[in-house]
Length: 336
Ligand SMILES: Cc1ncc(C[n+]2csc(CCOP(=O)(O)OP(=O)(O)O)c2C)c(N)n1
Ligand SMILES: [Mg+2]
Image (cartoon, rainbow, N blue to C red; front, side, top):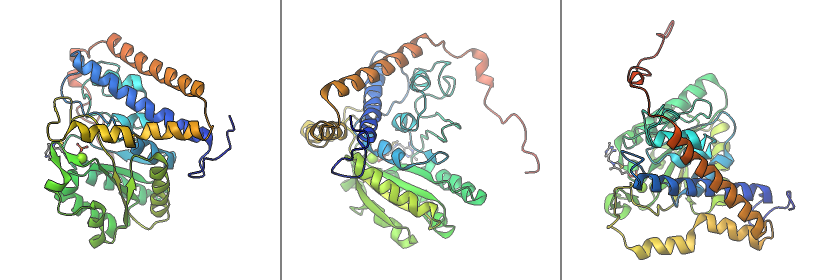
């Protein structure tokens, strides 16, 4: 396959496009497996699936560089996989096992990776927004040129702390990208019923924060917008808002039968706007990949996801003594 050939739509190579297909498919299949394990009673507590929104994180990760940070809400499995965290560690955490990222003590909403600069996983709506600005503050203070991707939902955008954060981020020109994953619903409440403005990104204007709408079902559009936002932040111009219009196919969490919308609405999205199908079609029509190439990717992903489920089943439950670890910092900060 011609690796350096670019697609018509943007200057993306065939290899890059295949990588986006693969990364989105990994999230989709992983989440489907998590849904199955939940149904089997192997995952307890809350579990918020990301199916339908895959192009958001995969597109933005394509715009990120080593050392950039990310922080998000409870709908976080896709973010972890997209930044390269180990599917075994994520699935084992979902199932509450020792091999999980939080040794089985955190579950779906509470995982972190210093190595991949992933700062959680937060269950309180919008709590991650000021924390994201704090991460960006630290980077600005250190002058290391890093950018923080702070993800939150359309519902979270109605929280007061978001606007306190906008104010400080703009005042101090913090290198933070506020990513509003607008999937049109906050639990069972449609955006129209809860939000005074149709376009949420315009709420940055009073603080002087530029923003734009992005098609979140198009991974290339997300990548392009991400690159623009990253360049803005890295050049010292301060925060940027990306309002990414997306859609979740499943209920808010595994316990939501989603009666507040019609099956037809979901079906239409799946059939007409699916982000993975769109890249698949691009790869095939542009002759960047054959059906066999794609089958090989599908097989590889299936194996990774099945292995993560096996790993989770085999990993033991955390020992009782673990109740007393990871509670306090091991040493008090010196000269704080
Ligand atoms: C402070 C707070 N209020 C309410 C809740 C309950 N709650 C959990 S998720 C959610 C909806 C958030 O929707 P949105 O920000 O659009 O994110 P999405 O779930 O669509 O990804 C609510 C109200 C909470 N966890 N924290
Ligand atoms: Mg939402």
